[in-house]
Image (cartoon, rainbow over all chains, first blue to last red; front, top):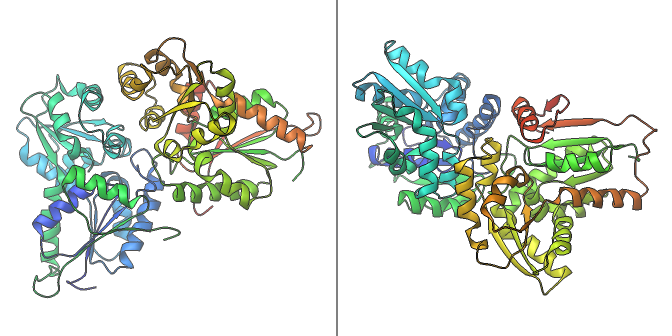
Length: 269
Length: 269
């Protein structure tokens, strides 16, 4: 492993591609390996133990490909598995919770921050813990929105159904002084327009992708592991555990992102 | 394996409990082992290869518990994995497609049958194939309803959101002469009231659970494998791959069914 090695990025499915995009913008010279666990998506409705087990398998897969760093692009896995993954591995492993929380603290004026995420992320209280550790005075309102992931994975991102689901979940924000909401799941930026429409005007939505990519860059600099662009042509590899074609299609449709050949990983990897 | 052995029943999650209930009613003397793959639910959005792989693992688990028959209570697994499972195993393996299809043919007057199911079930055309093999003159309209499973697994079974989702999916039935619709996913009976409300009046909904349990009984009789009630006290065992407590709660809430201690299966079973 050296600075020409790739950065590994993983998510339960498609959502982590929003983080991948930000990494590509922020670090154009880096090689990236993306892993989407599409055979077992979603993670957010499952137990911590199960998500830890899946995450450990994926990190092992990425380490076998000699990555120099792992970005846990999934909020659920970041919430429940990050500490464990960091303890068990020597390379730096970066999650999305802390960068997103810092970014929200920098944005809020009312000091009341909202967090929306999967059931597992919200039940872990991971965002509240990090936000309060930065500023104990901050108020936090967390709301699970479990149906947003299947809506996105099914490509149902606007129109009356997603809007009604969003209205139903986000109603509690209407009469609160929340001025900043963390999109605490990498799928949610894809629903951003719908979410915006049902929220009171002027609420800022925080998408951790940019904050994470800045954190990744600074960590690589600190460790002297930043790729030097001239050294080796960089590349992007994508692996999924199921339905590579559907993955390519959805990526093109929602993120305008043309992926290189998406490879299928099967069996006991 | 003998006639006092259990019948194994499996599903991706909760839905197969509707089949379990019917089996208990139809065959009160039989011991049953239920397996819900809650760590990897849903199946209906995944590829045939992945569903076959998961199903094979589960059948192996059930065979290790000496079952005399396996009921594939999941429509997706029945659609894409049944033939393979039957070829690879010596005990009888029964799916839900054929019994449901026969029951629909016996019900329809207009000879136009609707089928709703997961994306995988509908794309497999399994219902159309079986329906046409029984009566080549029959018309079939198949519609995938991928969001119904997460709605049920989240406990969102009535109110305006499920109704709007149902309306959106089922609109094509409004101007057709379909008089019979197969609920081609074991989760869907739990949404029956909502589905009924958005369909034209007089449409019959076919829930394969009863038809399957009758098929199971006749197969056991044919093989002389029916349990004799006095021989051994029968029992019910439940295994899930994640979140046993959530499983118990949802079972109580939607099916009024109190399950015995639901056991968690982890690791590489």
